[in-house]
Amino acid sequence: MVTVLHRMIVAAVATMFLVSATALADDISEVKGSLFIAGGELRYDNAPVWECFRRLAGGKGAKVIVVPAASSEPERISQTDVENFRHYGLKADVVPIAPKWTEREVTYKAAAADPANVDKLRRADGIWFCGGDQTRITRALLETDGKKTPALEAIWEAYRKGAVIGGTSAGTAIMSMQMFTDPKAPLNMLKYGIAKEDVGPGLGFVGDEWFVDQHFLVRGRFARALRAIDYLGYQYGIGVDEDTALVLKEGKFEVIGYKGALVLNRARAETDAHLGEFNLKGVRLTYLDSGDSMDVRTREVKVSAGKQAGKKLEPGSKDFHPYYGSKVETFPDMLSSWAVYTAMYHVIDSRGGVAEGIALDPWDKGIKGDLGFKFRFYRCGDTDGWFSNKNGNSSYTVRNVYLDITPVRLAKPLYKPLMP
Image 1: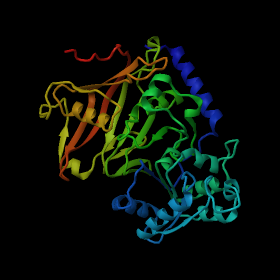
Image 2: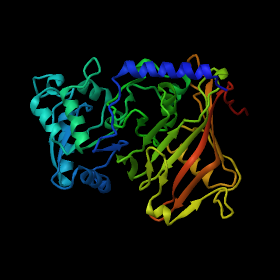
Image 3: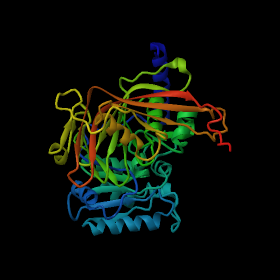
Image 4: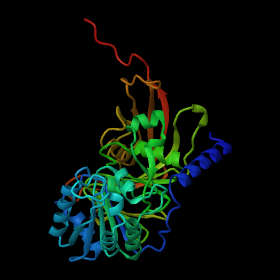
């Protein structure tokens, strides 16, 4: 397994990257505000989510400022968001801080220093970042030396005093200290590693312990997040699925919306440097369903009322009667939509307690075209979960499913045509 020297080298490189890429993280221990982290594709008719944002902002009549910096059509998108917030009883306005803003003469940097815009942000009860390209947000709100613009200083001031900071898609990517900027596809990131242009400084609202990603389950992004966490030296990551929001308030994550969020914990994971390609052993995954919450510090999970009234799944207990048998569930494409969630609930609700999958690209003509990865999900003594079908559909909460990622070589030709 990985040597102590190897761990020291990895940690040193990660630390150098973090320090050089952005200023040290702000202290969030005294922050009175909250974060509203949406995974993308957030529907305007998802009333429970928007009503939650309204409640965090202070209720009906609270002042919300929309920051459309990420959008390629900031005028149109910001006005649509403003109308949505007004529909839910909030007073909404826009600050025209966006690299793509067209109907004005001042630059976005000047807009980020404009006293009127800064005052709006400082006085806001809620601040909303639209989706789009997250690098536009950091380009607009960070100076070239990594320091905060006056607009970003005002956002932080509002956050510390009690405002809710929210965003969707790109507006979620900026929440951590480091974020994806122009990443490769998940499989290519596993194969070819993380390049300098793949990651960059975020705005750090979530603090310096967590890496945040979005569109997580539906786009199979857990693998790329694990690669980034390993590269950047994080221990924990969390990915939010589409039409779903993750609220961080008073040291607790809570999931609300259509689906859930996946927590990645590599604190005790190991790497075998002798394999020569990316690998991890013993990563712990926890899936939080809508209504679930987790203590950020202790990582203790509290399930929704529906799950509490449902079925507790404890593989080590004499009352464990799993739905699935001993067969190992297999997945031909582990990075496909929902595959990781499906694998996890098969682990917790089966007699065998194992699921496996692969990720490969037989059409890759690059120097690592024959490289693929095997994923093995399994349970240990601290693995448990909950099941409920209260709302007419089966849903799980799963805690501490273990994952090993192992590089494999693709045999070629992968297939042969049938002959008459």
